[in-house]
Each structure stands twice: as C-alpha cells, then as structure tokens.
Length: 287
Ligand code: GLN
View 1 (cartoon, rainbow, N blue to C red):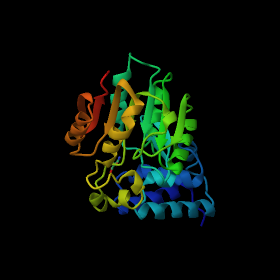
View 2: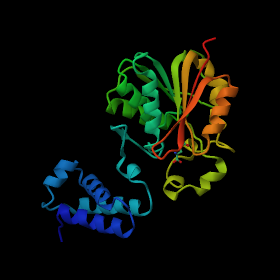
View 3: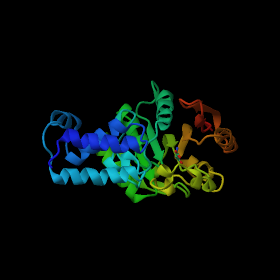
C-alpha cells in the first residue's frame, strides 16, 4: 500500500514517541524529510503526496539507527552551532550549546580591539569554534588544528559551508610541540578532550557509544591536554595574548591553578547557562 509523506511522518513520530525520544515530533520530521530527500519546506508542501517504497525503506533504516540510540546529528549529518549550519560525522563531537559560551567569551574579549586578530582553534574537531569566530570576525585570521585528519576534513567542509575566509586547517598534536612554522597568535582557544578516562564508561550511551573517544578522553584526571597546551603551545601565543579553554564540570579551579602555574595573568572563569564554570581565560604576560 503506497503511503503519503504524512503517513511516513506519523509512523516515525509514533515510533520515536513510544521509545521516549523527547523531541519526537521534530525528529520525526527531520528523519522523514531526510529519507525523502526534501528540505523542510518541500516536505511540508508535499505531505499529501504519495511516496515511494524506496523512501519508506530509507526512513525505516534511519529510524532503526535512531531507536538504537544514535544521536540525530550523526544520522542526518547536520547540526547547528552559534546559529550556523554545521556538518558532523562520527569523527567529531557534536557541537554542544555549552561551547557557545566559549565563543561568546572570545568575541567579548576581542570586540573593539583587534578585529584582525590571529586566532588558533586547537583540537578543533568539527571546526565549530573557529568557523563561528571567523564568521563573526571577518577580518580575523583563524588557524584550526586537530590531530585527526578525518576531523580536519569535517572542519574544511564547515569552512566551505559557511563561506568563511582567511581560515586554514592544519594537522598537529596538542600533546606535542607546535610546528615551528605556526607563528604567533593573539588568541589560542581550545575545547580539548577533558573527560577523565575512568569516567568515559559512565557517560550517557548516546555519547559513549557513538562520539569519538579521542575527542573526549582527557587522560587520568581529565587535565592532560590543559597541561600539555600550557607547556608546549604558550610559545605560539604572543606576549599579552589570550588563552581560552572550555573545561568540564568541577575542573575550572584546577585549570585556573594550572594557568597561574604556567605564569598566566588575569585568570578568570565564566559560567555557562546552567551556572557551571565552563570557560577559563588567562593572559600571557607582556614580558
Ligand atoms: N562536553 C563534552 C561531553 O558532553 C566533553 C567535551 C570534551 O571533552 N571536550 O561529554
């Protein structure tokens, strides 16, 4: 029996609701329009039309992935960060709303000062931070670094998708010294892996089973990347330049202490919308 697009949508909606998916209606529409290969407007316009068996099978496959707990972002490949469209694959973390606080803090620090700042997004993953900054600061020059070539591939896609200029991707390891040629930055911004290794198993299964562990695992105490960046990458920050980190819950005090030990000045932290200290900022002394 041929079905209409609306019937497909309702089938997805019922299945997601029964599985306890919170935004079942929205997700059903996104999955059904993805299976149909139509954007939101076209899907709504065509609700009464009959669909093909192929579309029905496609939706069933997408639905099964979602019902097994795979995050919607990986199934559709599309997400949004800082109001911008972002591509995601399982090679990168899905951008979190918490990370928007990191971008806000960076913009606040740069606004009205150095609009053509050189910014390094270290451990860039999907590139969401670097792309959002490049989008907001068209004169800035942004270098995005990750150890994973497949993550850089996603970053490049997001650079193209958002048509940001003066932005380049470079492969390097935050746990080692930066390449000599990288130059000096006015700002280094990073959301590195920060989950303590032993806590990985306790993460929600939608994170643990689908997101890349290399982007989450911050070593024994979760602070390995902060130590390494402060040890090796400070040389890439110009005197007077700013270092901004996203940190995990309960890590802000330790990361502030690490910054001060590394000789950083004006160290402070910023809470996210849930009141958790999410961002730690420090300045490299002028001399
Ligand atoms: N915030 C991520 C989480 O939900 C962790 C991100 C990171 O390690 N940088 O687990």
